[in-house]
Each structure stands twice: as C-alpha cells, then as structure tokens.
Amino acid sequence: MPRLQKTLAVSLVLFLVAITLLCLIDFGGGNSSINKLASFVGLKAVVAAPTIEAGRYGLSIVSKESVRPNIAALLVYAILGFIIASTIYSLQPKVGGLGSSDWTDVGRRMSESAYYEEAIDAYSIAAQLNPQAATAFAERGVAYHKLGDYERAVQDYHTALRLRPVVTTYYQELGDYFNSLKLVAGHGLSEARMVKAEQAPTTDFLWCPNCFLAMKVPKGSRGCFNCPKCSYEFFA
Image (cartoon, rainbow, N blue to C red; front, side, top):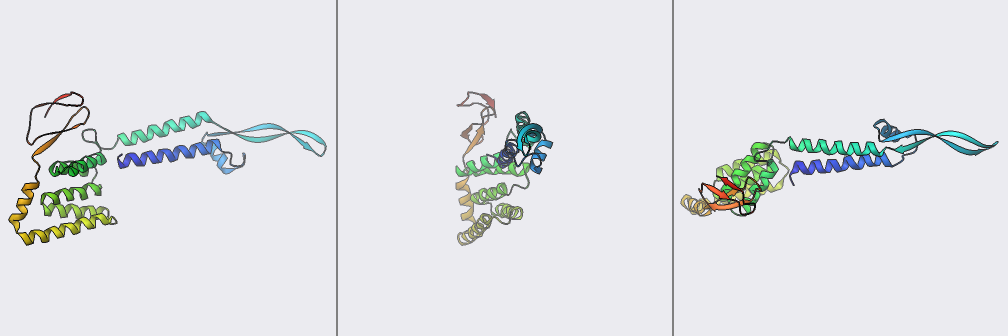
C-alpha cells in the first residue's frame, strides 16, 4: 500500500473513532465542554427533559438537560471524511495510473528479479513524481551500483541521505559503494566493465495497459502483444 494511502487510511480511522466517541459517549451531561462541542458540530443534541424528583415537600417535576446522540450527523461526517480522503489521494500526481510509491514498488520488484535497468526507469518516475522520495533515490542508487555505474550510485545515495539523514540503511549502502571502489581498484577497470556487461538483462518487461500484468519479452521487442491474463491486445 502506498505511503500516502496508508496515511489517509490511518487518519480516516482516527477521525471515525473520534466522531463516534463524541457522538455516543456522554461526557458528563449538558454542562460538559466536550458535550457542548459535540452539540455545536451536530453530533449530539442537548434537550430539556422533565424529571420527577422526591423533595422535602413531596414529589416535584423539574427540567433537566439530557444529551442525545445524533446518528444521522455521525453518518454524514463519516461519508464526508471518506470523500475528502479519496479526493486527496486521487489528486496526487500519477503516471500510468500509478503514484510515486507505486512506481517505487514496481522498481523494487524489478530489482529483486535482477532487471536493474527497468528498475532504474521505475525509480526515476517515482523520483520525478515526488522529489522528496528518499527511498526511490536510495534504491535507484542500489540499482546503479549493481550495474557498475558507481558515479550515479553515489549521487543517489547522497541525495537520499540529504532527504532523510536519520536512515542508517543509506549510510550502509554508501559504505558498500566505497567497498566496490576498492574491488574495482584491485581488479582493474576492464574487470568492472566485464561485471557490468554480465549483469545487464537481456529481456524487457511490458505492462498490460488493462490489468497491469508484467510480461517478460526479449529485449528490444516491438509490435502487437496479447496479455496472457486478460487477453487484452496492445501495441508497444
């Protein structure tokens, strides 16, 4: 689940809990400041109710304030909160229907399958959509590192550290980068180039525009493709 979606979901749950408590719990009668707040926003109604009390001279009828929950207002607030949260999430910039966190997840899956060039493309889209996405820069640095592009790797590591200096994992990645430099220095530049050539993938991933299924095809393939999952035909 994307980070923004998680934040909105948690905020919506907290909002629903708060308005439910304000609506259903009596915090001490009509004179309570919390009940007055709930009454002001429409979640409760403070009404005067006649009550029979036994006094010194017998029974008497007195008027006392009682607090009643407004369930209809509770439902209205819940629906409005859901609509606002959905609207905020839909307003985030997207490419291909995916937000920055989604593209970071795509890049992570590509990296786990050793398709580092495709992962770099996905991380680059994520960083473009959200320039503060430290995770996208850090993981793109790892992908550059795997391909042997040490200069770009260290640039992304430093960018990630600048955005989120408290994350110790980024320092570890930077340390791995310097260890790689020692390895290259010990084996020569030609050795590093050979490692880079061996790690370069020979296939590409295509994404179905209909169901977003990832399909592995030979690198550089172009033409008409059929999705094996939904049978959608598209050109790439």
